Image 1 (cartoon, rainbow, N blue to C red):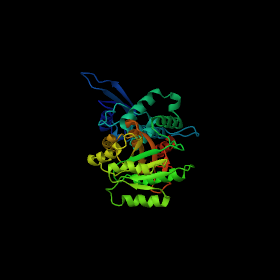
Image 2: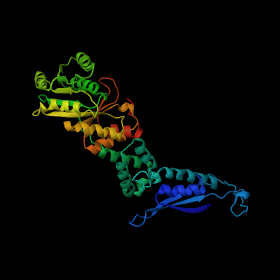
Image 3: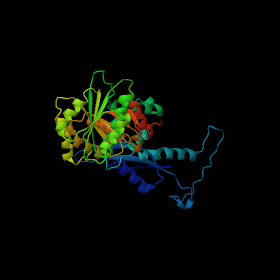
Image 4: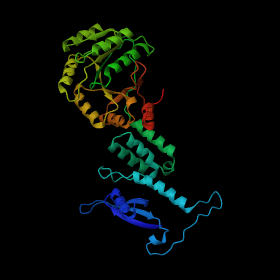
Length: 380
């Protein structure tokens, strides 16, 4: 085998130079940074590759005929050189996958082979790139060597990191004479009304307490919105108040004064329809002296930029916590975890299907970590 060295301003560029010269089958032996960027010079990386000598005499560089080495196996502990080379080749192929693309500002990080699987998991889950870089860089530097060689210990370590990252608001049942008012806001089609029905059933029948639950709807825009809630409240035998004007909200709350939980449904609107969001704000401004928890309902199956745009538009309402819906419609869960962490809002409930009231989960870190590690919601 021949050992050759190639340079580049990034690991990817050095790898391309090596592959251009030696072909795709060149075996990467090591990648290292040999100089850092200064005012007058650029960063420089070196990739060391090995190439196999061709055993065909017509293709050898100096026309010398090299003897073909036949593998000699004497017992189970022996192995052929060719098998050994192939194993190294397969392992180092994985290393090539760990090089950050030049389009990323994180391209200076080269992932060790021990972290390839967990890095791929973060990438497949669409976890925030900047957070991924910070987590991996600290872990690669600080994790004890004895743990780096154990795949299970590595996975457990990253589960611990995720547990510390996920912001959670655990459910605290209302006291006997306490009243909790919750307003649900968010874009059209995210499942606010269905989520409210699930929570109403939970509070009224599944908490082991004789809670009284009332529902108010402010959604007079969407066709069938009131009828949908009427159907749910009739089945559950719960009171429903329909409010069409901000000045009528106080009276509706007075009629539900004996309820422990009051759930307020609002009209869904695009994050770009600021007038409708401002209209919701007019309702809550009528209740300045009343404590209301504002819950932003978001679908788990949309991209990061949309999550941020929705939050930025609805933040004028003073969002307290988050509810994620449609977890059964995605395989990427890093996005919703890193988003909640970045905006510093806790997750309190997860909707994992359409069935009322069963497909609702009180959030806990173990459930979300299982979703992340397995890239699917846990089976019932």
